[in-house]
Length: 349
Ligand code: 8ID
Ligand code: ZN
Ligand code: ZN
Image 1 (cartoon, helix red, strand yellow):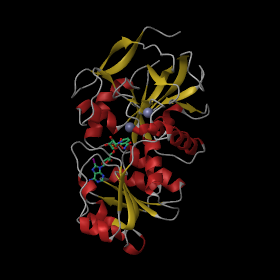
Image 2 (cartoon, helix red, strand yellow; image 1 turned 30 degrees about the vertical axis):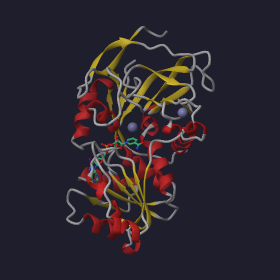
Image 3 (tube, protein in one colour; image 1 turned 90 degrees about the vertical axis):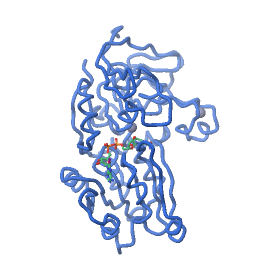
Image 4 (cartoon, protein in one colour; image 1 turned 120 degrees about the vertical axis):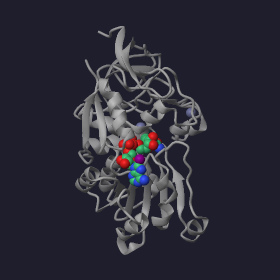
């Protein structure tokens, strides 16, 4: 039985905080499903959205969240490939037009008419959330819904970013922001893909986590006197990293990465700090033949593959649990950089 009213965290004005209140349960359109949420991850993107950090219009009032795992409880008559009772994930890409050149060539995240969960449409910080049937992730029933939630944004994003880096087994990837949500998963995907990891973040709790996750070296950006030298020293032969994954929600590392990238190396920008710019010395970029690019979530097949790595037991990143009501406290810890790994919120029955 689907109720008329539900609990949700609603950002009523830019800047927040989110307000825990009752709102109507939405009804799925013909090509949509309604998912009863069980768990949702909290991504730094949700904090950027609440703060209005980005030059991209958002829905107001807004139910944030885009890493939700739950059970399909209703569907429209045109919804294909997913049934009531299936376990399903709602991702950042809630829907896309499926008809533009980008959608046709499997670059759905680049669709000019993309719908974004927890940004342009209501997301997963509520008991019942809507997703386009073509875009929700069908989840194998044996996969635990709490641990899989962070895969639906963080996992897909870093898996895609590692593929975009072109790094091959045996090569070294520097992961900047390794102690955060994306970073902790990036280390596990990198390892599963046969890559060697140098973790860069701040503090001892994150150091401990990164060492457990399999990083060969940890460089503490808060303590290091010469970060570039320390990262290079940790790479084989001191030549620098074959790939750099920029996952931090701060600008500084985006202006430094070329210096510790190896010649012919690839820098992949993924983190989205507010009002930030990439800056690179032209001389080094040219004579080292460095490749600098961006990477933005992943397409539907990237989602399938990222979940599949997880379902095969290859991805084990720690997460902390709280409940939907605790979202403001989680945002506060995130703002202060105090979360090692990811927070996953339990959605009340
Ligand atoms: O598709 C995409 N491109 C995409 C998808 C999902 C998330 C982009 N993002 C963006 C988010 O919007 C956010 O800007 O990636 C960024 C990281 O998201 P997150 O992993 O959810 O954030 P977090 O858990 O807070 O982790 C960030 C880490 O960066 C570290 C922090 O200590 C934290 O552990 N960090 C910072 I802030 N400054 C650093 C620095 N100078 C740093 N690490 C190393 N050096
Ligand atoms: Zn996200
Ligand atoms: Zn499209």
